[in-house]
Image (cartoon, rainbow, N blue to C red; front, side, top):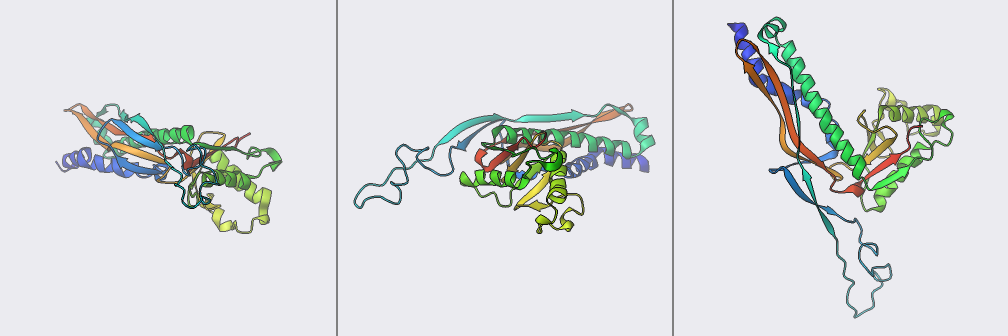
Length: 291
């Protein structure tokens, strides 16, 4: 009876706790998002047109108008504009095959824990893929590299200049990229480290060996580096966290157990939400990173 009670606990609330715990392990790209909730599947939101208002945004505004207005005259009228957008919640939904009662008894907790872990990872992975897809598609700033970062012998490669140009684009649109995330694929991460050490070596004295002791760049040029295979090949992204993109959650990750008495059970995992690019100018895509 003790085993049966233990298994009942595992199949109940403990499974839900496992789901939430495993979900926090590899869900890294959510760190760049502002996370809010929505109580409707149809999301209406507003996207700001510009950071700074100038002649491109309002007819007649020039440098001679603002800061050089004649005494007694009326001020120049300045108005920001917004575009109403509509997005729809997506459902990320998976389940395990039927797990027989005999398999559960033979394998004890491992078969349940393994299924929960992998199902949650699958849901979280697809959620992260969606977040990056929106970032890549909707970022309004783009610059191409001077040469692909994995070019042989580093001919023409200047990764520092490429990253700084991306930061410059964000600055020019009125956002501060200091402390932003630099999202890299594993290949571009390799190219960055190799170029800094083999290509530039001691010419970058501030790049201490301790920074690459664990095989990952923690920070470079004021940017925090995130390495993930969801990053599209041949591009990198600079993203201001909690500003450029928002994850609108319609429901947190949830697991349920479906039981067929004396036969077995299956595990279902679901999460609901959508990624919304509220400030596309707060991100910059760097293209042509791979030869």
